[in-house]
Image 1 (cartoon, one colour):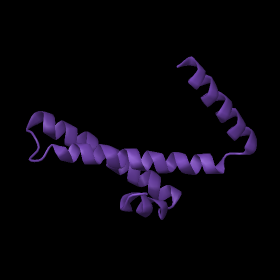
Image 2 (tube, one colour):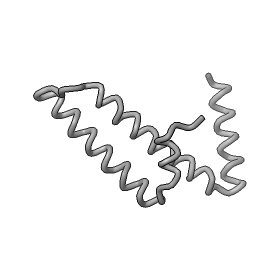
Image 3 (cartoon, helix red, strand yellow):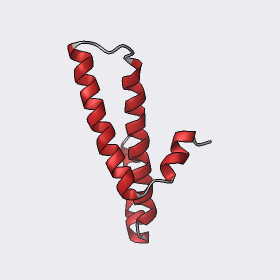
Length: 87
């Protein structure tokens, strides 16, 4: 079952999603720097921001896969199958 945050991301337009991703990554870098220099009051916030970035990237990728042509999807499947064999 998708989380509430994931459902909210599905309502974003592609541009909004990319802007949100860029802002969140910038915020994360700033928070990491602040934590290294003076420490954060609650360092667990870093984990939440990292997970938000992952959710955003997942939604961007999901939309890319949806827009792929049949040929691109077939090629992707072959690549994934090759990776499974190598493991």
